[in-house]
Image (tube, rainbow, N blue to C red):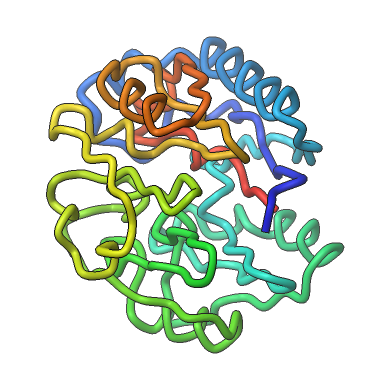
Length: 251
C-alpha cells in the first residue's frame, strides 16, 4: 500500500518528561524539538503526503510518537495497548481518525503491543516480541489483520524497527545482529555497523528515504542502493530514544 496520508502530533508541554535513558535526555530543548518536528512535517508534505495533524497532548510526554498507537494493513487498523501504563490513552484520538478510513479494532488486556515493533513488508509483517510487545499482542493483531505475521523475539530491545526497516524494492536496512536471520534471507540487505545502528529507524516514502543526518555511512549505502536520501536533524527526538518512523502513521 503506497502511503498517501500521515497522522502526526506535535510534542506537548510535558515532552521533556519522555521515557528515555539517553545520556543527553537532561538537555532536551522543547522549542527545538517543535522546530525539528515542523521541518519533519514539511518534508512529508514535500514528498506528497496529506498530513492529519492531531492536537498536542500535554499530559502525555511521549504522545508525539504516534506510530506506537496503531498498525495499519490493508483495509484494517489495529489500535495498540501500550506496555508502559503512563502512555495508555494516547491512542484515543488516533483511533477516531483511523475509524474514518479503516475497520478498526483495539488490543485487549493482557496484550501489549506497539507499532514500533512492527516492520511492514509487501506481503507480510514482522513483529518483535520485545520489552513493549508480548505474544498475546501479536496473536490479537494476527487474528484481526488476517495477514502473515512472523515474529522475532528479543527481550533486550525496546522496538524491533530500531534494528530493521524495509525500504522497498526488496531492500532492507538492518544491523549485523539480524543480517543472517532466516526471515530476511530473501531480501537484499544494507548492513550498518553497530555505531550507526540508530540510522536504521528511517522513513521510506516511495523512492525517498528520510534519515538522521548523523550517520554518513548509512546514508551512503542507502543512496547507492538507488534511493533519494533526505537527511534531517533529529537530535531532540534521539534524546527520547525515538526517531523518524516514530513520529507518524503512514497509510
